[in-house]
Image (cartoon, rainbow, N blue to C red; front, side, top):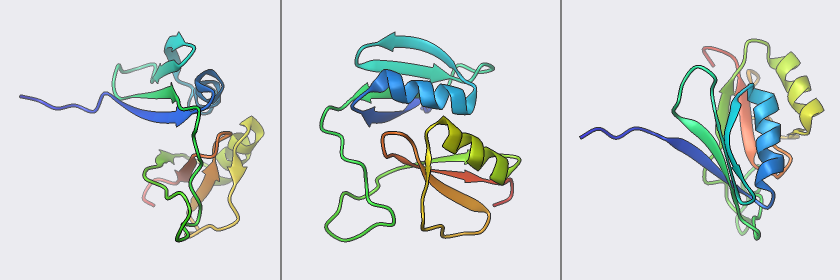
Length: 124
């Protein structure tokens, strides 16, 4: 028996809008779109993908984490070749750079619906 990661799924109040953000950021292809579900994949491979499902009551997590607030349960780490240029590009697409940055070679951002994600350089 083999187990393979098929996709990482983000809950969001607007799956098509958030999928459009990540499609532009990653350069991935959209392979499925319904009102409450969108799936992306890299152009050169089938899996793993990145999917977006409707969650009308989505509450973005706190960053940095604070007791009593919605906690981050997962985030995406995205490797980049140029940290500053890709941070600027992500922000131009709608991401928000977070004030608290725990490391010099990593940038913590939030996507347009509040999910934290990190950009990092190879070797970081």
